[in-house]
Length: 236
Image 1 (tube, rainbow, N blue to C red):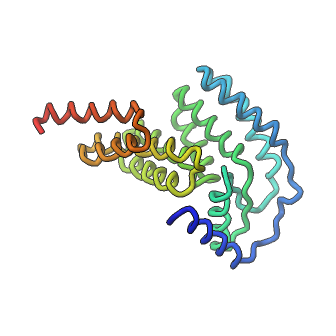
Image 2: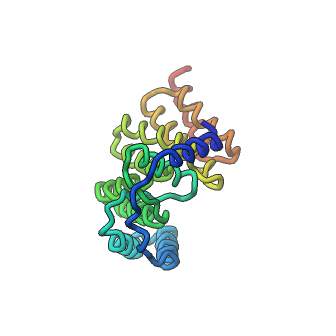
Image 3: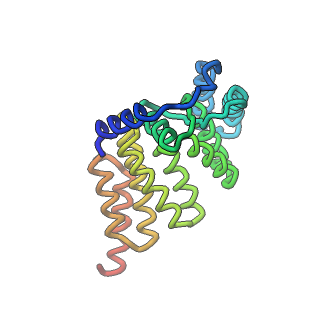
């Protein structure tokens, strides 16, 4: 379904279903503060200091969880309008009351999970990433990171499912500025799994799709050379 058709479909559903009373209208949070904390924490990760970054994400998480502790609505976190509309449409279809909050909340879970993963705490990271995905189930970045965790655990079926979901989410719901990066990440993840499963043709297809998006994708190029090496050893 194209982006325009998706948007039209979502608006139609929302117009057809009466929402329940909004019990979050009086809730306010300091979004500017949380945005800065998220920036500071992510910069620490980038500089190789994930341990110190965690305290920044904890402040964001605590702030949102305290602000919304009394709400009975289902809480979603989205990056842009199309993603927001999808969550609200799904809630409306299920006759659930829901509200979409800032992306900062889910990203605080995501970045804390990423930090913990860097520190070797895989299971704790997985739990936090599950929270991020619960709030942002169409966020391709989150889905690929969960695919990465399953990949590390060599759970190929679950990793495959996550990367497939991430690719679909990127195609339909990633913002324009992030779409190609997130789609390539998902495809590279699929390529890795296909190589592990011995399906070299499927893996090659994924990596070539990455190069179609970005001819300078060095990781995809490296993986294609790796596949060529495997075939050479097999005499294929």
